[in-house]
Amino acid sequence: FVWVVDCATTYDVFKKTILQCVERSTQPGFPAFVPIIHVTREQPDAAQYGLPQQSVFGGRPEIRSILGSVKANGILRHAVYFCGPRPLCDATWAATSDMSDESVQFAFHHETFEF
Image (cartoon, rainbow, N blue to C red):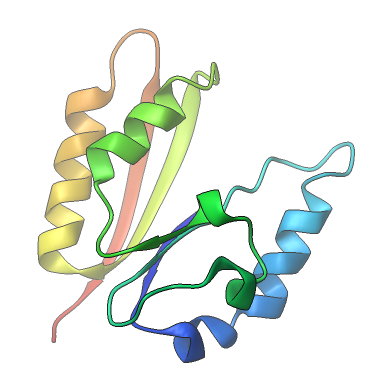
């Protein structure tokens, strides 16, 4: 789960839900839920987000790097759902198309919004 937020106040809207998903994903029968939060307008403090340091980053995400990590996890099929601005959507769509091959497939669904 990759989410780009401007600040902790925006994250707080879904903080409880995200932390519940993290907790639930540790239980048998539930899918892995790995949040990756990118904060664009302030220096993030992972403790404030209730997440480990390796889950919270400053700045915008590098989509190809994230998908490369996903591709390396050994799972053969991945669903990528995108909601956000058109330029990042286009970059994500291109990355999922380029990185899909006979060993790993990315299915892509999107919704976009304009600023």
